[in-house]
Amino acid sequence: MATKRKLIKVRVPTRERPVEERIHDFKEVNLGYDFVTALQEAERCLQCPPDYAPCIKGCPVHINIPGFIGKLLQHRDDPDRAVKEALNVIWACNTLPATTGRVCPQEDQCEKNCVMGKVGDKINIGKLERFVADYAREKNIDEELLLEIVPKIEKKPQKVAIVGAGPAGLTAAGELAKMGYGVTIYEALHEPGGVLIYGIPEFRLPKDIVEKELDKLKKLGVKILTDHVVGSTVTIEELLREYDAVFIASGAGTPRLVNAPGVNLNGIYTANEFLTRVNLMKAYRFPEYDTPVKVGKRVIVIGAGNTAMDAARSARRFGVEVIVAYRRGEEDVSARVEEFEHAKEEGVKFEFFLNPVEFLGDEKGNLRAVKFERMRPLEERDARGKRKIVGTGEYVTIEAETVIIAIGKHPNRLIVNTPGLKVERGRIVVDENLMTSIPGVFAGGDAIRGEATVILAMGDGRRAAKAIHEYLTNRAKNN
Ligand SMILES: Cc1cc2nc3c(=O)[nH]c(=O)nc-3n(C[C@H](O)[C@H](O)[C@H](O)COP(=O)(O)OP(=O)(O)OC[C@H]3O[C@@H](n4cnc5c(N)ncnc54)[C@H](O)[C@@H]3O)c2cc1C
Ligand code: SF4
Figure 1 (cartoon, rainbow, N blue to C red):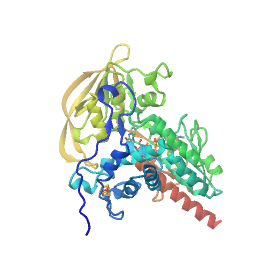
Figure 2 (cartoon, helix red, strand yellow):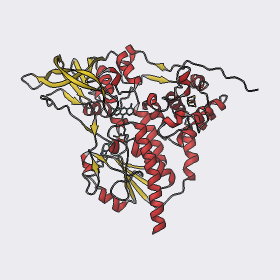
Figure 3 (cartoon, helix red, strand yellow):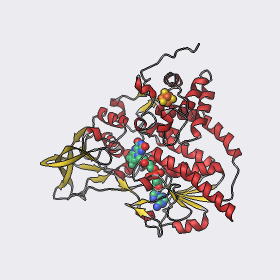
Figure 4 (cartoon, helix red, strand yellow):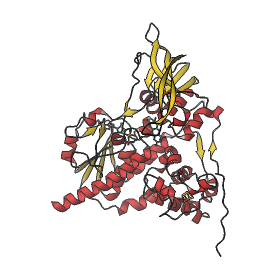
């Protein structure tokens, strides 16, 4: 007779550093599970069959979630084996699990429809994925697995160039290298990683973790050329002469600005510049590192996405007052729930329904205040399901020495201006196989979507790798 399973309704919590400690540094806030707590959480999973499991359907790269959780349960008496087998299941679909486990908006993806949600808390899939990746890295289990995979790769003669070393480019590179292609990534900045390195701060995603994930790619044979700006150092046309296919994964790194008088005053940053200084150039450790960053006594961050939360929480770590001003309401905050909660815990203040209309400066051209119009929500919703808003004609002025604008980004013009490349609203146009209007040139990630998510960019990287493989296989057959 089948035994009835006891449902464990409450999620096993992960450890977090206390606010009063973490607010003074950039070290990681969430400390994740250890093997014992990961197993306790894994035991809550109902192990839905893979052809039904809604968590797999919700994951943009379709990781076999009950499959990897099942491996932890199956080998509970042998943690190293449990993790190795779980990692093997994850790697079949995702080569950057330590990153995605930390930054994916799981509440909108895999966890969204987890059946445990009907009776209690949903399974903490992201933190379980992160546990597997972290444990494997700390115990060198990922290296062991790589050593088993690399000798089995059959080298192919064709070469593929990838533009941009963010999650889309890195994923495509890993997949193509596993298929045996010679892969070279061209990256404009002096370090690979894209937003993972220059955007998302250390307190959410430690850089040494991203670097270790990058090392794995290098071991798969991927070459990364940094300080190479495609469109300037080398063109797509030139790449096509040297390589059999090209994948454009240059992201959406050009910030949008607020269209209001005074936007060029001193003290106004785009979130891109602020976060690049803080994260990539380590300005929070100035003068040990030589890039400075100026943060006034009161900082206003405009916007309420992940970028705004990262900018606000980074600014808080300089010991100053931070206000996030958003033109919509709390229900429309698009940042991950965990980041929004952490920002509130860390003392970031929120002002909703405020839209900036003017930046006010002093006689020296330094910012001194921001004038906002109060907004009001309507019943009607826009295409994204957000309530429309209108101005009330009422204004408020808030004093501040620093403003960080985080209202979104669009793709880089250098690439978008490539002759023959079809582009709409600044985004590269692709067909169902992610091929652009130039045969042999594919594109994915934020370059085709505008600012989206890490896992969607990675999903594009995987799809593009498969499509490039089919394209090159067909071309070889027809020659
Ligand atoms: C601050 C911030 C926080 C975020 N937080 C989250 C989060 O918590 N969760 C989440 O899922 N998503 C988050 N996102 C969004 C996510 O990071 C992006 O959707 C994702 O990184 C897109 O990946 P990508 O590979 O398409 O582009 P990118 O990560 O932007 O990488 C593009 C790379 O291409 C390079 N490049 C650009 N032009 C050229 C050129 N001409 N030649 C050579 N190289 C070039 C760039 O230097 C960069 O390294 C965040 C974004 C930001 C900015
Ligand atoms: S839906 Fe939830 S309970 Fe079912 S397999 Fe996925 S994580 Fe486990």
